[in-house]
Amino acid sequence: MRKSPVDIDKQNTVIHIRGLYKSFDTVAVLTGMDLDLYKGENVVVLGRSGSGKSVLIKLIAGLLKPDSGTICVAGEEIDQLSPRALQELRLKIGFLYQGSALYDSMTVRENLEFPLVRNSPHLTHEEREDTIREVLENVGLSQSIDKMPSELSGGQKKRVGIARTLILHPDIMLYDEPTAGLDPVTSSDINMLINEVQQKYRTSSVIITHDLTCAKTTGDRIALITDGKFSREGTFEEVFQTGDAEAKKFYDYNFIIDT
Image 1 (spheres, rainbow, N blue to C red):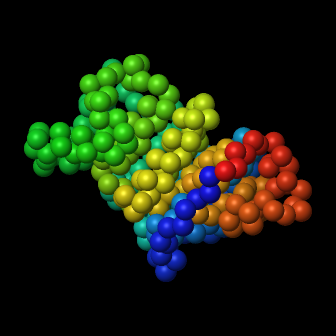
Image 2 (image 1 turned 90 degrees about the horizontal axis):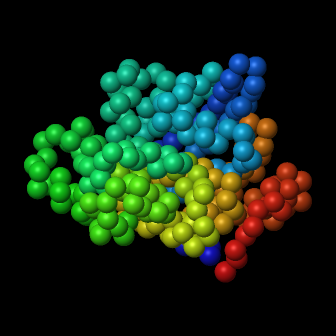
């Protein structure tokens, strides 16, 4: 399934990255990466395992510091912010971890209530309850509000993880391998949910994946990492309908469901 067009404001850059370098010990991971994310856009970052995809979104979220280069998020240069200012900026960013990162000892309701209590203490109990139920309805899991994470399937855990990121109404969503470990049908459901989130919440998203079906379904623009920087960028067809050997190799090792 191809991505339906959405309204993207190319006059409004929400993430601006230039000359980004990051190494660990003697291993260079990112080697001069440039990227812009526009308001209302889903950008899919593709790359092999170990290519630096997850490092990139951790840098965007301020969880890692770059060796050099510039990362501006919502007009703020990430590595120049004080800890308090960085924490305030992170409230605008929803981060879906690969493993969903739910608290095993809490129910779904309690997992969603936790960020509200911490970041929106002015809300009444009734307002928190209404917010939790609304966001669960938006991800199709109203009936699971009192379940424990151990009672949920992998796809349901992903949905709860997305709900928890949405509960503070972030402007930016960062998805780390959202379909990893899921069967094809559940993966398709998650891909559709990512697009619904983009439409309902007007989010701008960076989606990290090596799943080409996910990329084709959710990406308004695709960026392919090769040797620590983006080697190709554009629509799915522009990136892969090419004689570029690296792009062809990446495509050939993936299974595409084309409908």
